[in-house]
Amino acid sequence: MLARSLIFTIGQWLFTPIFSLFALFTFPFSRITRNRIISLWARTMLWWLRVTCNITYVVKGAENIPVTPCVVMAKHQSAWETLAFQLIFPPQVYVMKRELLWIPFFGWGLAMTSPIAINRSAGREALKQLVALGKQRLVAGLWVIVFPEGTRIAPHEHGKFHIGGAWLASGTKATVLPVAHNAGLCWGKSTMLKNPGVITVSVGKPMDCTNLKPDQVNSQVETWIKTEMLTLV
Image (cartoon, rainbow, N blue to C red; front, side, top):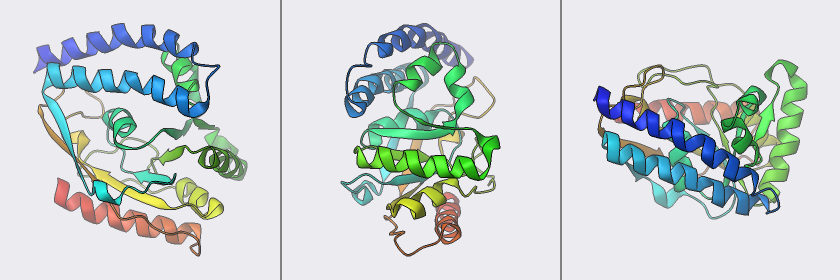
């Protein structure tokens, strides 16, 4: 397992800088076109992960995925879901801390996907920026992915659900799609080791947030994800 994990990591290190430079040349295209081109990196990494570490996945509740852009509020356990979501859902952007864009090569390519990069220390101004940029992305036909816990949490643990994703959904009257998964069982938070297995991604039913306040949205999503996680771990 150590040898397989090391081979995957070396391949990831070699391929990512090359593809990140390639991603810079997608600048003239529309956001959706750039997203589709850049998602080839995620497809390649998931293929490489399957070949080297024997990690695959299944999607439960795929019929719940709507045809129109929405806000996905998902469990965050590893880097795996940031790859797989690019195949499971339509063209998308991520809500993230702006510091990720400063990472050489990786951050440059990431910037081409039009993410919603937030200064977390800005408080309420950050929430206003989130709603404004989120509305732009949704209108442009892009889905918005939010990890309410803000950081990677082990499969058997639960972090605090921050208000940002719910605030965005309530402020834009967007539909929310709750998502749970157990990727952390195969790809842990602070280890290079990858355990072979089949990751399950569970997609809940869309939630209409038209008449819901942010705290109500957050509460409903958190309850569903926590309950669903009991069946996944």
